[in-house]
Amino acid sequence: MQYMLLIYTDEAGMSTASKEQVGQMMAAYGAWTEAMRKAGVFVTADRLQPTSTAATVRGAGDKTKVLDGPYAETKEQLGGFYIIEVPDRAAATSWAARCPSVAFGAVEVRPVFAM
Amino acid sequence: MARSRSGRSDRCSAKGSQPLDENGAARDAAERVARRSYGKLVAFLAARTRDVAGAEDALSDAFAAALAEWPARGIPASPEAWLMTVARRKAIDAARRRKSGEGVADTMRMMAEELEEAAARAAEIPDERLRLMFVCAHPAIDANIRSPLILQTILGFDAAAVGSAFLVAPATMAQRLVRAKTKIRLAGIPFSVPGRAEMAERLEAVLDAIYAAFAEGWSDPAGIESRRRDLAGEAIWLGRLVTELLPDEPEALGLLALMLHADARRAARRSADGRYVPLADQDPTQWDGGLIEQAESALMRAASFAVVGRYQIEAAVQSAHAARRFSGYTDWPAILGLYDLLYARTASPVVALNRAVALGEAHSPNEGLAALDHAAEDARLADYQPYWAARAKLLAATGRIDEAGQSYERAIGLSSDPAVRLFLQERRASLAARH
Image: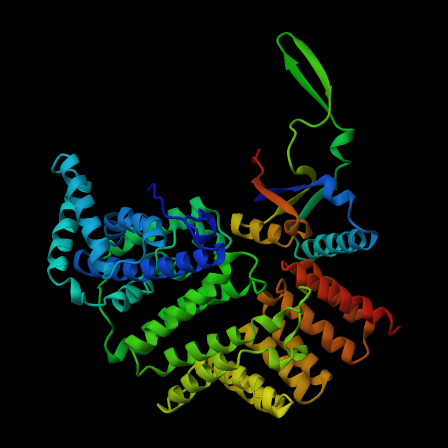
């Protein structure tokens, strides 16, 4: 079964991290991704540009508006995602718990709708 | 089931003029007494009605009231009588509000009658918690839910608190707990302490469930999450309870000794600035000497029965590590001998891993690696962080630096504790210096 891990972290907090901390975090992400590949659960993943680059398209009445910024202003922002293939939710959450961002934010675990 | 029970980390309404920490201590003390009394009453009611969920329902409002009132007003002289009085009133009210014939009304009426009878001898309510523990860890109950079930029924932790400890969503945990309690009722699992013939096997299941709670609590050694930190303490309390109620069971004493030894090293596992400190690098003066002595005396008493078991052997390993505080060195050959014994009994992949590490220390890293290769034939180790960390250390010791780096990489990717992850990253970086 496929699950999406949606990674939410505080962009402002991350921008104040030292170069060393960022390096450690990137290395940890590399190791986590590689561990999932070796375990045969990795499907795909991507990191997103910060929400300052986002545009949101929304219908308003019979018009369609394009707004600058993310869909919602939140304390933590969606910064990337992984899709993994695992037997059940328990396995998905245990991989999510190993995400290096868990210590600084949250990882939402969502089953992918099977088509 | 809507319950107002809450874990201690949720409640921070400090009342009165006392300083905060004193207030916190009063709250903790009140909560501890409330949990003990609650568990005793749930066990008592459940043993008489065979309805665990019904017993919890009958007591839940009273328990919530105790958690709310006792910290501010003080612990009543007879906590159990207080809980029973409130619970009886609520049960009678609930039964009255509903039409007779409805299942809930019948349950509540039955509970009210039981409470009535119990109140008559409030001074001496028989302690049925041991029976309830044997029910929770019955072979008919799924092994994964036994530990959560004990934490909920004996200690009154809600599904959210138990779920967060076991990394399971609250709704899922609640559902599993309800299912298990229904099974207890429908399958007619007997509320009894097993006889001699069955004792060893049935007790092992109870001890395993307690140890599972301890291990989950232990996975948060920094104690950042108060619920988890408490969990290890609660597991030790359950371990003590079992040794009090079954004083002549060596394995129960062995488990208690094992948990106390591990707990004695809690503070030493982190440096002042929060860094992870592996056992080999820990300063023995940081270990809790009082807890080590308690552990040693439990283990000695266990040994006096001359019936060896898994928990006693594991406690003996910890005892051998603890001996470093006097001897200044670790007796690896002795530890290896204990793991040989343990592996012969359990054939567990984790024991095989620990045995390989001991072999690497006692003999040579190459022998340790060979044993580790053999252990890795069990696929369950493939995503086990300590396996890769141990492998990396042994590879580094034999000079296979590139492979050591790859193993550290795998361990880093599999760790969920930020302090451990950083420690492994530093170990990995220090390999590069050796190139």
